[in-house]
Image (cartoon, rainbow, N blue to C red):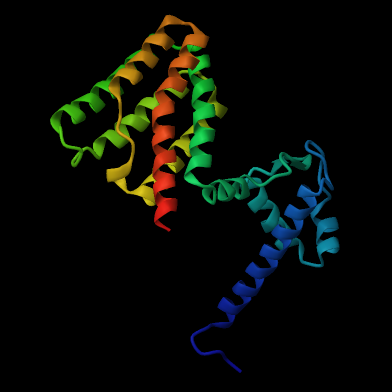
Length: 246
């Protein structure tokens, strides 16, 4: 008996994909439960296939997915080892479900630490990059006295803040920040619309660059927190206004 609109190969592929998904979920649960500590080697494909009651090819595909996700790492001739017991994709999905205030507060914490480290580790090129982004932002503001038409400031502002954090020369910090920076922008646009996003104050941005260039980490952190205080307060007001309308 045939199924209209579906070939036998398609049905087999769908069934196989379901088995792979099941195997992925089972392995994720084992990793999260600490069945295999970070750094340890997981059982062989044959052993896992017997435990999960699936074929070795299914196990191989599931492991490939978890290697790509960063939970496992394969070493030629040695086997597959645990890199992380938490799924980064699941963490990011959790962040996406967080409120704009929550994400903004985490971004602020990352940025303040980035500013501290940038004061200690920045290069002349880093300072040029910050000032260039800030100059472009100021040009857009000057060209559009009325807020409408200033959409370009959003990208220039994100470019500026990213330059600050990347001046810390910590790749892990920079990667996490890039994600949070984009999430904050998207969350704020979704929640409030571009016209309600906080205005950019160029003077506080310039003060941050000066503080980083001075090489004083305490001054840089203080300048960063002062810069972020206004947008955080603006978001609080917007959230309160949204709550009041409900």
